[in-house]
Length: 244
Length: 244
DNA sequence: ATGCTATTTATTGTATACAGTAATTCCATC
DNA sequence: GATGGAATTACTGTATACAATAAATAGCAT
Image (cartoon, chains in turn purple, brown, blue, green):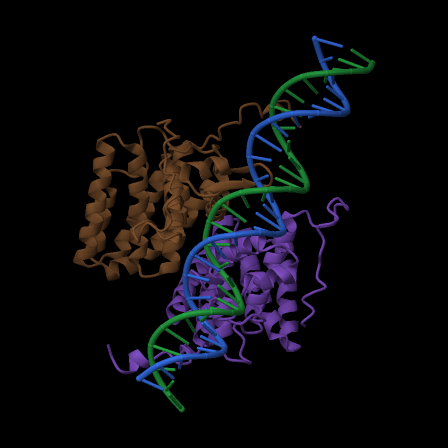
C-alpha cells in the first residue's frame, strides 16, 4: 500500500519485444483487473474510482482509464455520474429482479441447445471448472468462488454456440456477482456446491429439458437466498420520512 | 447531400445559455445522429468512419468522437480494427443467425409479460407507431420504415417492465437493421404491413400465448425473407476459388 | 517491366495541459 | 455557537499536440 510512486513507468522502452503487451492488450489486461476486482468484491459497491488514482496504479494516463471506465459503465458494473466521476455500481432491488428474470429466460432457454452440443471434451472442461469452484469455496475464498461460479455459467452459455446470447449472459453474470455482493448472506454463497455437477450430468446425458428445469430451480434458489433489503443511505430518508 | 461543409460549428459560444446542449447532451445527440444514420442505412456497412472527419462535421474534438465510436463498437454497430479505425459493421451470416435466434428467445419470451401489462394507453401508443411505420412504407421511405419498425419492437420490450431485457432487445433490433440493410431484398421490407397491428390486438386481448406464437412466426418470416448470400469482398475469393 | 525497398502521407493512439465545476474548508457575521 | 458565504481544493471534461504505425507511392535495382 501507499507506494503509489514506484509503478510501471514503461513507455521509455516501446520496441522491447513482443511480450511487452502491445498497447491494446495492456488495456484489456487493466480492464480485466478492474472488472475482476469488482466482481470479486475487492472493490465494494459504492467505492469511488478516481481517474488519476487508477492512472497512477496502472501506469497509464487518464485517457486510457476513461476508456476502460466507460466500457465498465456500459456494462453497468460502474456508475458514471456527470461531474462526480465513477463508482462501483450498487444495484437496486429492482435491477436485481430484472437481472434474475433475464437469466431465467435466457439461460434456461439455452439449455436444450447446450445439451445438443455437449461432448466429452466440453463436459470435462465444465467439471474441472466446477471442481475449482468447490475447492475455492472449501478454502474460504468466497470472492474467488463467486467469480468462478460466474465463469461457469458464462462458459455454459458459450457452449450453446450463440455468441450474442453468450455475451448477454456474461453481462448478467457480472451484475449478478455485484448483486450477491450486496444482498447475499455471508457464508451462504449463491450456487450450491453440487448443483453445477448435477447440471453437467443432465447435459451430458443430452437431456435438455431436464437441464432446463434444473437451471430454473438453480437460479430461483440463488435469488431466494438473497435478502433484498435495500441498505438505506446514511442520511437520506428525511424527505421520505416526513412525506412529500 | 454532400454539404458536409456548412455544418454545426458551435464551440465559439459556450456560455450562450441553457438551451445549448449541456455537454453531455450534445454527446448523446451526436451518438443518436450517427446511430440513426447507420440504422437507416444512410451510412452503409463497410463505410469507414474517420475520426477527424466526424469531429469536423459535429464541431467537437476527436476525444468526444472516440468516446462515441467506442460505445457504438460495444453495441456492435461499428467495428473498431486496431490501427485502421472505425467502420460500419458488416454482419456475417453467422451473426445474423445468432441475432435472430436471440430475438426469437427473448422477444417471444417477453410477450406474456407484455400482455399482462398492456393497457389502453400503451395499446394506443403502439398503434400510433405502427401507423407511422405503414405511412413511411407507403411513401417509399424505406430507411425510415426500418428504423420505425425497430422502434416498435423496442417499445414493446420496454412494456414488459424489464429494463435489462429491453436494452438487449434494443441492441438486437439495431443489429437487425444492419442485417436487413445487407441481406434484405429491396422492396421487401422486414415486417409485413399488418403484422404489428395484429400483434397489438392479441396483446390488448391479454392473450400472451397467442402473441408469443405470432411473434415467433413474425420473426421467422423476417429471417426467411433475407437472402443470406455473403457478398464476397471485391477481390477476396482467389484462395477460396483455387482451393487451400 | 517487375519486384523490392525507402519515403511520404494519412490516420490512429496516448499523454498532457487547461478549463470548468462541484465539494470542502475557513472565516466573518449574526 | 451556528449559519451563510467566499476562497481553496480536488476532480472531471475537453481539446490539442505529439508519437507511432500502417498504407500508398515513388524510386531503384535486377
